[in-house]
Image (cartoon, rainbow, N blue to C red; front, side):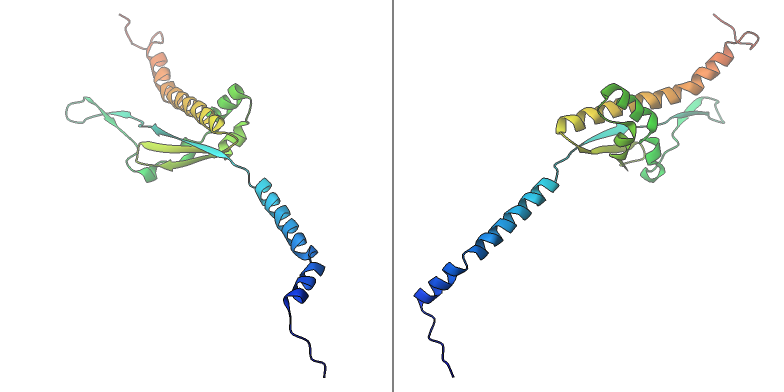
Length: 172
């Protein structure tokens, strides 16, 4: 039976010197893996805005006949994302900014109802904080204009019908 001599420091040093390339190779693989992970994770920015949207309809009270404003929304669960993440405002923003398509803008918008009249919209996945804020502000302005236009259209039709010749409306 051959007995191995004890491991001494000089023998351990010679063994380590023969295998010097293994720690170097492991360090190189680790550095390459870290570079790959760092390049794969891309920093994106988001912006959040809030809208107060209270649709008001006029009804007439039975007793006095006076107009009474009513709101169709009473709870946050009554609100729907499709009323706030819409194609028309996104197309308006896409035409004005030229840096993003309407479909891309809509795909990065998220909606959460806070109350029955307050909504929070978040635009995420943007390349810079400035782009996120600029695009969201443009979208919110376009959304408000679009909703106002939609609310005004029925009133304009009623007004046009009232002022048609032969409608019985008198002009002052």
